[in-house]
Image (tube, rainbow, N blue to C red):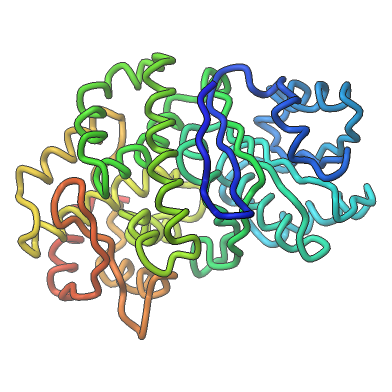
Length: 362
């Protein structure tokens, strides 16, 4: 097991990474204010891992409430959130009951938002089971649900007390989900860690073959980058926005396609190429840099073209992005490989050219 810390003063918390951590109740028990938890999972993950997490806790004297939700991005809604509240209230869960998110990004975001709002705030723990959630969404306290008009538009910043990333859960992860997670891994190299980007280029093949040591290294380095940024800017007033490389375009893809029809990581990958093309159009990076990014994404099994919903539709959806300020879309772009910036100075005609040039049939 390898561990690191998210340095947030008296709300600091550890991230533990390694194989076989689900059964290690001793890692969880110190973070419980009372011997009571509610584990929230979904119909895909719960049959695989619910008992492996719950039974050691029960053996240690912890009361466990099991909550199983339908699986998929289309269920990341206020209606599903109410299902969590219904279950918590029926089980008479109290303010010292800790919610544990067991699953991918959807479960993590939903459970975190439930924890932030149930009884005006209860503790929660992240136990991510996908590569994407282990390297990104489980760390940093972003929680929420989608709205028909935009992704993640309803939520709260609410930090977990612990992140437990059991790499053995990746053994049952479908290949398409593994590739989706790689989009967020590569993101860290592109925005702030050129040596990591170069390491990924050298190791992408073994990562896609699920070599355990390589995966553990990629997760550790990703989490270290995320933890450093969150510690500096918890509420995304500055540098944390850089973690959204590709997301302004990517969220527009997800919304236009209908939630769940494009995996988040795939939409981020296609969106990152749009951001790279935009950066090249501004003269900040060269065509060779864009090609280098595209090659890495292709090797990771990621899409590099976006569905053809039309430039007008993309611009309409991006105008509803959370990073819009004073009516202007703020993009995360690349000044160089390993160096990202936030910019609202992107001409609309450039955006239209970039979108038109990288669209494929939806």
